[in-house]
Image (cartoon, rainbow, N blue to C red; front, side, top):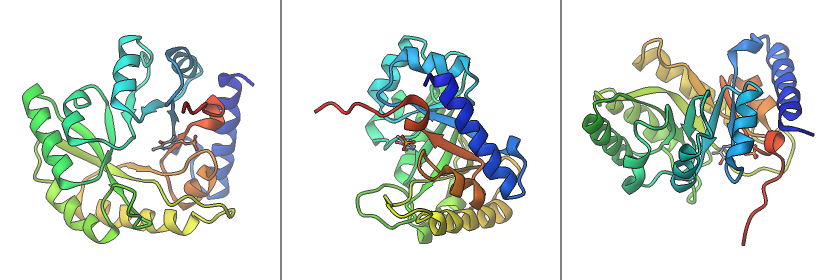
Length: 231
Ligand SMILES: *Cc1c(COP(=O)(O)O)cnc(C)c1O
């Protein structure tokens, strides 16, 4: 199957999930998680009409930017972001989905000021409370979202989450529903109508994420095929 064919079938499944939930199929954006796929694969996805591409690693993103891998589509940063690499992402990524601490928001503000830009971000929620994952705990999220309003160069556009790895079907649905509730509360109480992105759901569970209210899904292997991890 080609990338274009995979993309078409993912989009059909997204549309069906949206309709089943009584939602407009056009209300969910498809972000291709293109890690470990080369510039050619990215360009193929862009040509096939993907809404955006998301990268996980700063070094890989920088190399692929130099190859014009993302020309024609917005670029998102979706991976764990270290403070000392923020400088290489601000102003380059249209959306940083993985802003998961106040320290990171401060650094994004600092770098955006230097470049005289406003950086769009999503606040990452560690909904499973996992030690190994970054992101705000559900309890820390609301105060963080409140504090984030004071950063003049950071525009919070919504929330992103990566739930715990789960083997049972629909196992992540309760997590998606919790994050959707946080998204509605924060959007209603703290932000204006620019707060529109709820990024959740991957290849194995994007339909459940859409059922719970996702407006953006991040899909890798279902579009690009299985990644070849190098040892
Ligand atoms: C890789 C990745 C995805 C996509 O994962 P698949 O299971 O391949 O669809 C989504 N979000 C993030 C943050 C990722 O790193």
